[in-house]
Amino acid sequence: MNKFCRTIMAAGMFLAMASCEPLTMDTYEKNLEIPGHEWAYTYKPVFEVTVQPQDTAYLYNIYVNVRHRDSYPYSNIWLLVNTQFPGNKPVPQRVELPLADMSGKWLGSGLDDIYEHKIPIQQNAILNKPGLYRFTFEQNMRQNPLPAIMNVGLRIEKAGLRKNEKAIP
Image (cartoon, rainbow, N blue to C red; front, side, top):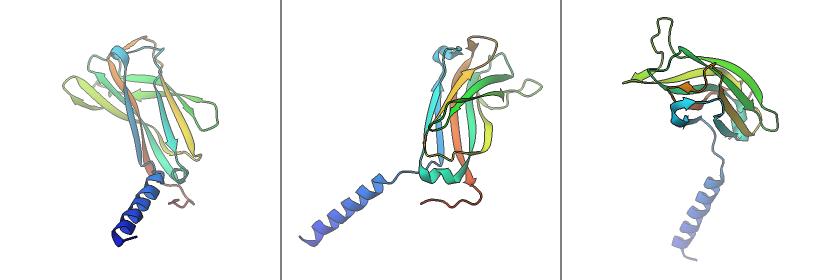
């Protein structure tokens, strides 16, 4: 076998091994459009995040993203966030997401009549089991459907290494 063929084979094997390496989760973000921009009780967006074994050594900050029109009639939104850890039943948590301050000024960034918010719901969360995590959001306001909500999403950012943990390569 000539030197060129050996070089090509070695490069191919290196790429094949590198492509099998699971990637770590530095940031997960997914946003879903609310059908008709009116969030009904029956629409329950689901976000699925796969945590690899090397990701379990870290802490994570978890956010809910909300995008709405200026015509949204409330200063907040209440959500039921159901979190299902690998192999467990979903755990519900009622969360208030503030969208405006006491004077009625929107807290998020705005462009024209559309506002976007990245609202923390958990800081330094521990995702200590590898596998599939499922987050389901339900709007939990008195009004149904909830008008002028355009998108909702989940963002998970790596916050740092847990104490007494070593990063797994």
